[in-house]
Image (cartoon, rainbow, N blue to C red):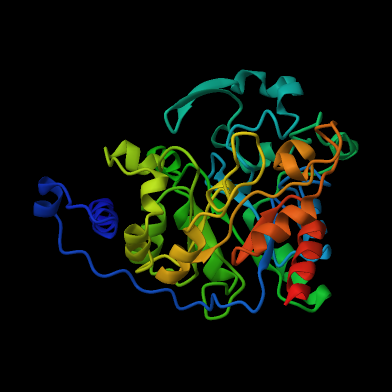
Length: 378
């Protein structure tokens, strides 16, 4: 019954009629509870994307701590589940690129091919390991050819649990004498629910246990899917601000799986934003959805997304800002080395001028400098 209510709630929020067989078999869905956590900020947020992943292997406690010490307002753990239903911080549940699992002979038999969100992947998956087993692995740099300096830290850090991230956040808030926020993302929620390892139940329990589901708590919860966000708001009664992540292409997997034709682009249209704002607090678009690039790779003119979202009462936190030339618009690159740093501060100031409410960056110190420069313009 809970799943039926969730499907009904999502389809209603998106402006669709629920399938007749579901509508007939379910009790009327209640209106989603509005968020009560404070989302008004006095300056744009700097979110440490996977921590300070430009300087340390991503999703390690070292990466998160460095991000906070560089001035990030929030640290961002992506969450997946272990076999024994413990949330851990990895960008994907396939971990061959971010841990040393492929070099561990004792786990050679765990290599598998699975279909995740409609795509076949071969590798090692967190849901096939207990937490104790996963803790024997060590993190490695995901982009060793781009960030060769980070490889000196390979093998030094564990895969952290969400609980460890929350305790780190609390400690850093005390030591830095300012709130350090946490911005968790649920990864592949539909997939994990299908194997009876839903991410939302332990996430909600831990967020509440840490006292973060209350007014003015430093937290946002994000996802590329709608159903799990809707469940947290309506079924679990979560008050924390919820953010829908979007991509410049494609559609949420949960909608695709249900035959819902809407794409991310559709969800960002003004009418849809107004509907989503009844229970969401923000959107996290790919940065090209805020300012697209021209055919020559240079930065174009801003879209209306920021104004449309603000008109609906939604925050806008685009991703991902990185310092290396290969990730920058052509007119902000310096030299021809794709891995050399370009004019990343200039790019971020340009985006801040559109009115965005924050940004995700692999280099939090760069984000802080860009924000200071932007605020100094006023």
